[in-house]
Image (tube, rainbow over all chains, first blue to last red; front, side, top):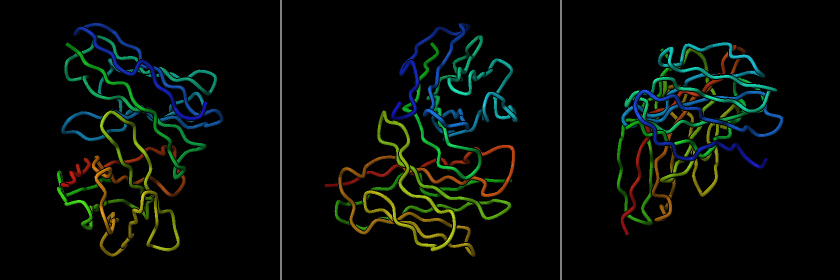
Length: 114
Length: 116
């Protein structure tokens, strides 16, 4: 596609439910990043994929968060047993390679946990 | 620790006035530097980036930024602000060398309001 796409654009869920957020990177981009943007916290890095592997998962805020990437393309961020503090905009970015390459951002998924 | 500081949370300028948004970073080596803009409900759009070479970089929409190594700063400037520039601006740093992780570290953003 022309850019990074994310779905859904908005998600409202009840506390305790699981949610899945999807990211479609730009075709051919091997690196994929997830960030979270919440009020007062700015943009924080969650996880990075090079191909299908995630070398560093230390940015995930808790073990309720997980992510996978298949076929070197689509990535899914899963949040289990959602809490109100998970409410945020989740942004995905992709780049041709790791470090230093320009990251293209998707429009984000706004998650609201009620 | 690696960090980016944007000291101004909110700035208001009059349309046509000049603008400077401040950014300071703490990083182990010379990083790659970026400025992004985010309009309400939109994703992040890259304004400009510094990788190496000339320390004054030009970006889109008439923006420029100057890398000052001695001050660990990468301030964003625009000579004449337009109402459409009202948005939130993020400074970010990324690794310029090898490593297993290429994530960007962002400042907390500066919200720009433009008075008519």
